Length: 201
Image: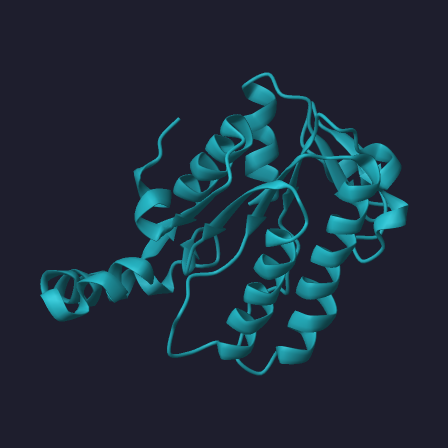
């Protein structure tokens, strides 16, 4: 998601800096600037931020699953706190955060950590745009396409319509479009799945 977002932002004329581990500087998309640092330590990248920047937080545990509660706290939560610390130190005013749709009957530990992160942002003083996808379809993540008929049925039933829409599937392209919109509009706003699907650039 980060690579595709960086490429689209560069194409739209934005100056993009990408946080990478040491040794991965050459992996950033063309036109982007690599910033070497540790996503879990805001002091390693705070000096690369400026007040006019928008910080987009995309750090998280790969392939979230119910048994990864420890990783959610060690990576997802810790990286958000580090980014908030760095943004505050630099005077950044706009923060974009990818959370998760909730409530939901599964992934409770994941939702709990992401909700804690949202709470931190709500008190941090930024203009914060939060995106709440449930499952993002893209390379290596196509299997839920088989569930589309089930979603269509649930959306057609009044009693299950709201939940099915809130926990619906979004594509990588839809997510990137919504992230670009968030960067360019600088609004305190929560984008749920229906709003993510509706944005085009």
